[in-house]
Length: 350
Image 1 (spheres, rainbow, N blue to C red):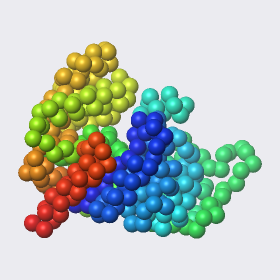
Image 2 (cartoon, rainbow, N blue to C red):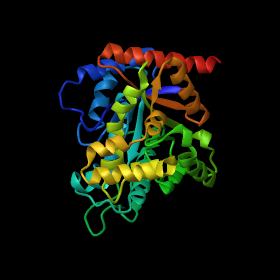
Image 3 (cartoon, helix red, strand yellow):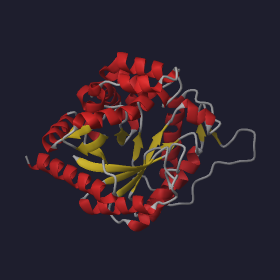
């Protein structure tokens, strides 16, 4: 397995101090990390941090993890991706996702209806631009040029660059099948390798439909890595984040993260945590998260336990482990990351 890391997220940008984040990525590159993904929620955008990192690094690949399709038109997404590829010496990866109704309708002012159709149309238009074609498209949600106006089909003035990989962060069964059909990689969330079939069977079905193999797709999945001799204390601390995911990452009606955990062996638990969270009973929701869900979503314990979990990820078909190394300081994070990579290297040598 290769190793990737992530930066950003909902709380990103609060300190307006990006230097420690950049230092972490620079040192991670030295350790041999393959990819860094920049998250985009309602904090920092996904692109600008990667442009900064492109100037500070030379080998690590730089990906949007993920760019929200509702926040940019498909043509602007393509222009931005091609620009990033140019300034990073072709190290850029375009990660796309549909986000959720609360962000799409609340922050972007776009309707969330038919998210998979919108994702498919976005990918098709972006790939037209990558190939250097005139962007002339007639879909359900995107029609270019705009009918009845003065526009004409345009070709981007940047040189074609059909090598930019497209990764999709998908969760629902039909979206996972589309990932198998069309994507270069999958960015997993609400995933446990112990129940990998809840996701992988759908990806494999889509790949077969497109005469591809699931081995053609870079499967990126992982979790927090915490070396500790007090695993129960850590498990209890991590329940808060999982309760937020199950209860708040979406509306009471639409929560893809919750649905994925339900398919992955935690149906009753996911429903009850969401019910308590939506009812405002947050402490009860946190307490209701089962230990097993935390243990299967993260890597917690001594080196033997973490190595055991890494083997499960590898055997489930994960090709790139997405590590979130624990640590209160840069040095502690890098120490955890280094130990994790040593264990992954030991798997390869074994």
